[in-house]
Image (tube, rainbow over the protein chains, first blue to last red):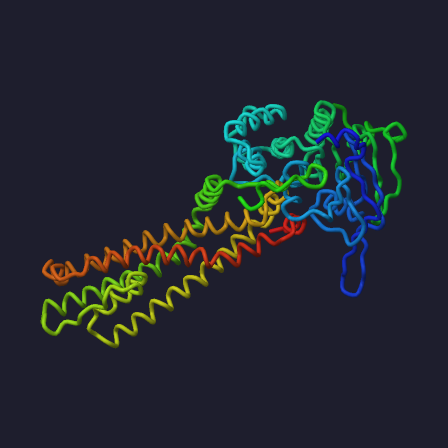
Length: 249
Length: 237
């Protein structure tokens, strides 16, 4: 994969449009979105609910097809991929984190983390070793064999983060990762994501309306009514996070 | 997954190799059954009952044949020959032992109906169980599962339930009838029993129960696998 070195942008979108037909009305969830995300960046996509950020998340993650426009992952046009290549991409290149955690309820924490490794064709021994290591990284080394129902929301999200890193993806996509968590747990999750971003160099793209995210993001993309309103670097954002949170840690 | 192996890596390092070894698929399917044991038991009980009924009919026909031989060996009906047809469908041979013409026809008809009803029942409960798991299935697709993995998992799951249900049903159906004849008529009946045909029926009914369970799950499995991941994740149950 020598080509990877020269590619600065891990994700690029051009004229990305998604429209839905509601009765005789055409609703634009996204309209001509142009976005460049560099390798190793921590990006937050901010916007009120219904602004199109989840739609953008789905498009970048290859979970839904755009009406028009293109998404490039590592300079590869996603529309050109067949089902096998798309599955490979979802398995190896992109890790997903969801608001509702989406762990497989019948599997233990360790089995949830190793599931993507099964698809990647890893051997059982390797899989177990790596799964344990990942769960230790997210601070759940003691709860390998717990089922999701036996874990708190924050712990479930940690398992989901470990799972998203199973096959060393280049990108981790997070859709409202703190949406179902209380303030403190949300903050811990954000810090964990930031740490992984720093230590492992994984690009993190997070759709959120959690203002705590701004503090750790390299860039914040504000989206409204399906359009990019503005893109800000962290230094430029004037926001007193302490006030927003209303509590000290 | 040999078909896509050996494909050259295409498009900027993106490859096509994604796998789900059969052993792992069995493990996951078995897990899905044991975790939802109550639902699995209800789904499997459909197969259980109709396969038990199938074996009751077979045993009854064999017993009628044995009774006819016991009463009047000269006038007993000769059974159907062992041909490809009767080896594949030993129930034909079992029913042919029954000297009662009307009962033969009626039994065959009832057996077919009960198997049909059972198949529709399995399809229905698999559809429900799949709908319940849309989000789980969407998640698996996000983790890199191919449509065919989802189909395989669900077919294996249904097949395993069918296998267990029909094993239990056939043994119980036959057992109950054998015990009943033993109590009603006594051991002398068993001297003329065509055990070979009966055991062929036993194997046949387990196979047909499993196959029907798999066939019944095809439609729900494809429905689940075809769902785009984004839509599957959106569903709220």
